[in-house]
Image 1 (cartoon, helix red, strand yellow):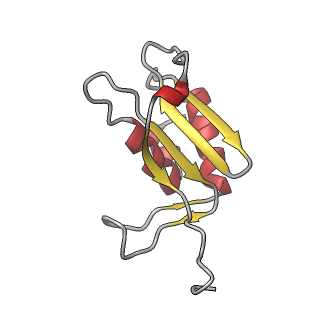
Image 2 (cartoon, rainbow, N blue to C red; image 1 turned 180 degrees about the horizontal axis):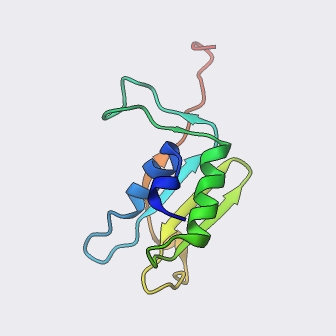
Amino acid sequence: MDWSDLTEGAKAVLEQTRNIKNDKIQIVEFQVGFEQNPEEAEGAPVSIQEKDYDSLKQYTKENEYGEKYHMARNKDMVKIILLEEGKIPDNLSDFPVFREYKNTPKTEEEV
């Protein structure tokens, strides 16, 4: 699968996994159904829907660039990392989440 075949939400997530600096693993966590507030966006707001998750899933299995990813989903929360040397680290909880795309719960005042 080629980069141009990805949905926009999938591209936004994958671009964050590519920021490997100083040999540190970058973990991106996102929520399926996430809609970024336009005021918080740097450029176009990010939206990650089920079709974007499906696109990521397919890309991580079939990409043409030789990169290896690990993706784990629990309900609507998904974590994805670009693996170094194709290996999953022994303890992923030792690595901080680099970027999160999650909806914040509304307070009672906002409801």
